[in-house]
Each structure stands twice: as structure tokens, then as C-alpha cells.
Image 1 (tube, one colour):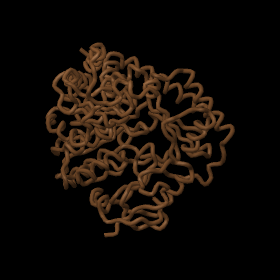
Image 2 (tube, rainbow, N blue to C red):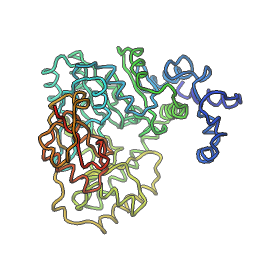
Image 3 (cartoon, rainbow, N blue to C red):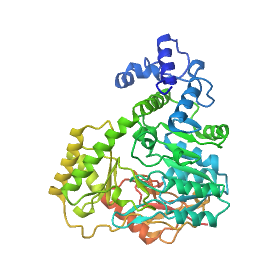
Image 4 (cartoon, one colour):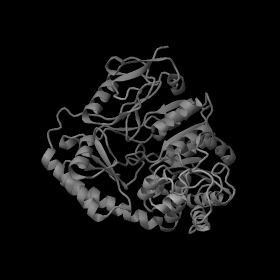
Length: 479
């Protein structure tokens, strides 16, 4: 059954039927936008169509989209699956809003993507943060300790859900099976942000997936490591989750004009992974493993991996993530990121103050891996310096003094960031990527956070989230 792609097949049939379009989109198969058609191709524009009976309707699927959802659920070992065209941000938000209402508590690590906190702003749920472990040398947040999750559950027996990153951007995994068992014993749902874990479902020798661990819901970013088009995602649900209610929550915010380009890409990517996933991710692991080994031979860099595993805050590590610590060559990760792009024509995923991340997939070639290794070696030779004065830590856990929703909608005024210490933040400040807030609405601004923001800005990190486009002022709560 997994060698079928119902949406894709329906689109092929639609194209062959040569239907005369008197509906949207207005480009009419590309005839009205010749430059766009030249850029993307006639076949692409003819496939950019609107919902109609033969092609089903994303908001209330009854035919080909419904069949494609069932195939996706089967492929991922889920009870139900939803095609999402608003990115994994929309998957995360629908997952949280299906589980929590205003005033409900949710237990989660603080090193979540901004989409999680955005969901709390939208639904009014109250975060109960579990401080993740911290690797002081690498300066990165780790996973949640099982004992810390257990303590949070015991102290908040009225919480509705526990959310887990599986994995973090850097490839760190918490003990998802044990956390799931603890949460279920307390009658709480388990939600997994698997934006970077699509491959866990299809490859051998990888960390456990959320559905295999017994989680109730998972937001899976197919476009990141699964091969679908950017902005396409799956929301997976396990047994006992009311799929009809989840669909209603999705439809509160997701477009009523779902892109069939995105939908068909999800359909085809799922078929590809279900039939070829083991081979695809075996190659990915091989390429990433070779790159890690050769980068570590250069000296100065630390392409870290399974050696971090400690059975708790680093229960497992995703070896497809090529995360590299750079501080020993006297350069911030973001500085190496910029040099790779500007001097060597290499675009990696992100650089932060101490590390960089290169996303490796089966679409990469050995020649390109060698080019990355060679460039990193050249950067060390040309630009390395003393690490004296480098920022000696990365992750800061802010104190929460107000719910995100109350702070976001509260009375605010803008002040210079350097003068905001001791105030409650009314907006986000984050480096993007990875999109993990340095400070979020409702959190206390401290001198340490101000210094971090200033240092990140000086090193060239892309700071986002503030009303002020230059990130020189910040909104603080005046109540």
C-alpha cells in the first residue's frame, strides 16, 4: 500500500483532463504570469490548483487527501495523521491547542522553538518549565532529566500535558519512553516536537520516534529531513486522541486554500521514505559519520556525537546532525557560518555563539562533504585566533514571572535594551535560526541576558522577534 500516492495521482489525472479553469488561482495554470511560469515551469503552475471534488478538500477530506492521510498514519505508526501546509509551526500550535485550554498547565523544557510559546500566547495555557541540562563546555541546552520531569509532574498534578523536544536542534534526545510512562501514569498527554526527527521513523540505528515511544501527538517536519517541499509538515496522533477535535483545532488557523504543491510533496515524500527510508538514512548516517570523523581530525573543532550520551539529559544522540563546536579556534559558530557562505560559497543551517550545524541528507554528495571539510580546515588556517574573550556559555534559563499570553497582550512601552534590566519582557528576542527565544514574553530581563543579546548582535547573529527592526529597543511590561 505504501507505494501509492493518492494526491499526486489525482493531480496527474486532473492535468490530463484539461479542465477549463474558472476558479482560483488567478494565474490560470500559469498563462497569466509568464515570468513566474518561466521561473517555476509550466507543469508546476498547472498543478497549483484549488480544492475541487476530484481533488478533495484539506479542511474536510473525504477522498484522496483522506486516503493519503491514512497511508501517512500507517507509515509513521500513528493512529491518524494530518497534512499541514503552514509549516511545523502550525503542527506544533494545533498540537498544543488540542491539548490545553486557557489556564491549563503544560510541562515543557525552556529550550523550545518560538512556535511553542506562540501557541501558549494563543490558547492561554500556563508553562511549567523544566530547565534542560546544560553542557557548559559546548554551551548548549541538553534534554530534560527524568527526575526533573517527575518532580514537575508531582508538583503540578493538574497539568494537562508534557512536551518533549525529540530531538533538539543539536541532535540531543531525552528519555522519551520513560517520560511518556511518567506522564501517562499521571493522566497527562505527551506531545513531541519532532521538527528535526522525521528520519527517526524510517532509519535504523536512530533514536526512538515519538509514536514508537507511546507519545500521544507529534509534530513532524517532513521538509527538513523527509524530502518534501518547504513549509509542509505532518501532525501525528496516537490512540485515544480525538482526531475529529484535532481537525477542528487545525482548521482554526490553517488556510482553507491548501497548496496542492505542498500536499503532493508530502504524499510523494511519505511514499519515498516508506519504501526507501532505510537506504536513504543509512547513506545519510554514512555521510555524516565521515564528515564528523574528518572534521575532528583537523583539530580545534569538535564535531560532537554519541560521546555526550549520559543516559539521562543526553539519553541518545541523532548522528545525522553534524553539530560542530568552534570556540577552540577563537571563532563563534556564527562567524564560521558567515565565512563558509561569504568566502567558500557554502550555506549551512545555522551558527550560534559557540557552534554550527550542517544538515546532512541523502541528497548530499561525497564531493560536497569534502568541500565542507576542506573549507573548515582553511578557515582554521586563515582565521583562527586565541579564544580569549569569547563568550564562555550559551544557554540562559530566564525566570518566568507572568504567563506568555498576559505579557504579550499587556500594556507595554519600548526602552533601550541596555536599560531594561529588572523589567518583564513583553515580546521575543531570538537568534534565527534556531528560533529558540533568548527572552520571551513574561520573562525577567537580567543583565546576563542583555549582555548575551549585545554579544550575539556584535558577532553577527540574526536577531528577530522585536517590534524594533534593529533590536535596539525592547518592549517591557508597564503594569
